[in-house]
Amino acid sequence: MKHQLFNLWSKGLFFIVGLMLLISACENEILINAKYKETIVVFALLDPNDTIQYVKVNKAYLNKSKGALETAKISDSLYLDSTHVELKRISTGEQIVFLAENSIQKDSGIFANNKNILWVTREKIYPNEEYEITVSNPISKTKAVSYTRTVGTAKIRAPFQDQTNIFSVGPEYITISFNAASNSYAYDIQFHVFYEEINALDSNKKTEKMATWKMVNNLLVGNNASPLRQIPRLSFLQFLQNSIAASPGLTHRIKWVGVTFYGGNQTLSDYISVNEPSIGIVQKQAEYTNINGGYGLFASRCTQKVWNVAIDAASIAYLQKHVLTKSLNFIR
Image (spheres, rainbow, N blue to C red):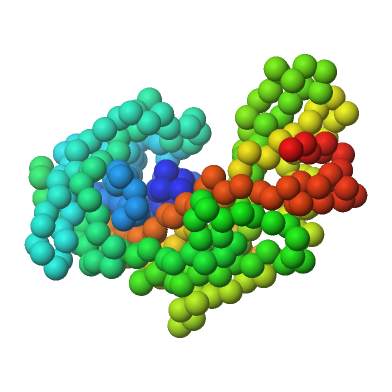
């Protein structure tokens, strides 16, 4: 779901910063600050198809002597003074202890980015299993707990099942067909075109690029075990037209195409739905959390890729002639 773990965690903190700004804007004579209580903020997505799992742990903060935005620039204000992250597979009792890493650079912005502590495990996560996460501060004894059930693997049937298939733009519609995975609730599907961009005057000057099309967003499967969606071929041609540079001095060769399926459980789908921008007059949004004793999200998704699929010669010929794509100068 389009929707990366490292962006998800900040939404919870933005809510907390907004609350702090509201408090600090009030008159000094009114003592509205309650006694400080440490609140753990957790964001985690378990993906059985991934080789590494991340948990983002922060704390909500309240500083009476500084504004919320000023405090957000202080790293120590964002992290617990001591943290223990543990995952338990309910069916077997297997326990996994996460280790802290600070290897991924955080983008600059409202929050301090001189460090970006993530809690990590490379232990196998199993599909269609219930997991419990416990995040605690051994010093303050605060604890946050949540449960989620992992998403299984879908059976992808179209637009192609595996790398032995050939992709064609011959049909008027591109068909998306799959058997939904266990515990899945909604899918996002991306289509990728990996191509070479070649200097028409010097074929040795070439650059490999990838164009990604958000083909399907938030496809709810519900009780439909075999969802089917047909995308007009015209939409694909418009995607190519808008994604690849058209120039008399450039030619393009499609090396392969592929799809990525992101299947999310209902917890993840609900969180995304609640956090979508409001289009009504009243802009206030509901807050969503499934963390007991804290704030945030513990959910699951399953990422599946079918890449390196060839495109047939007839499709290249079609792209060379179509009014929307002929200026892209496709070659075989």
